[in-house]
Amino acid sequence: MEAEKIIFLELEVKDIISIGALGIAFLALFIAPIVNARISKRQVIAPMRQAWINSLRDKISEILAIVSINRLNYCPSTHWNDERKEKANKRDLENYEKLMLLEASISLHINASESDHTDLVELISIVVKQYHDSFVSDENKTKLLELSRKVLKDEWEATKKT
Image (cartoon, one colour):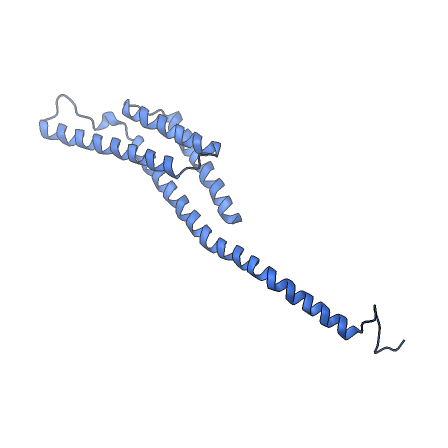
């Protein structure tokens, strides 16, 4: 057996190397498109998920801002003049309409198959009803903030994994 000619299954080393290179090239032909598709998917989905997270955060922030001001602070009082009462009624109606819009928008953005998401929608619904009834409990505001943080964090973690 010569040093230059090592025969393995009647093939020389140069033939084995050629077959190996051909095999690797063949694998790369099929693996590269799969890897590229995954990278492309990440580049498309991650920004979309981040935009969704930002939108959800903004909507929840608006809800918390509106419900944090007691309606009785600006609802018309019997001793106010008519112009001031009209402005207060208009503001109250605008805030309630905004809450209803935000509640509906969040309901449409939420994944109904995830329990935290459905819990968030239910809690928002409770908070909006309490606002309509002129008092949102501090406990529900805190729950809404904590649950929102959890949902947003979970979504952020999922975005990082994509």
